[in-house]
Image (cartoon, one colour):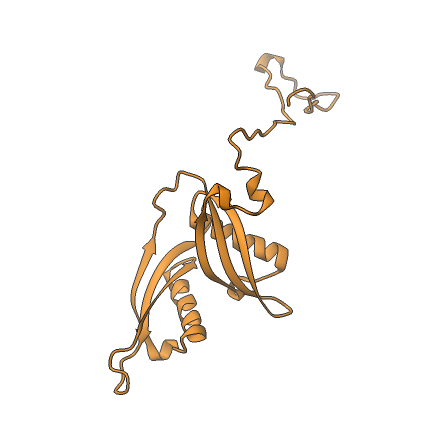
Length: 182
């Protein structure tokens, strides 16, 4: 996906408030993908309420840390394991994407789930993400780009004319299709 995806990767650490019954509560650490840290905290508390039975009113966030990609200049194959709420129930899905950053792959996943499955952003919970080796990729739309000599033919090209040969108005459409370029 070209341009800024708007998704950021956060690591959020939180716990329930200490009480007399539990003076040192368990500390939980989650990785969350969100637009900003405020939305990230809301996602964190939604998952905490769902998985660990800790509400925002009875808990505290200890740390929010943004995670950056170590090498954003190389293309990697990502596998995203997610759970989403569909019209018929909860579904577990594994998707594969090819991108330079994990946030870009997550952005592709959100766009793909919205387009193909009509799943909203709030209905999708990311369970885990992994970087795949080329031999581990399963999906054919990812495997087609794993060869070293991938060609992208330029089928419709318009030749540039010098300014003295350009005409303002033409009596025919330009011919952009040429055969024999494969």
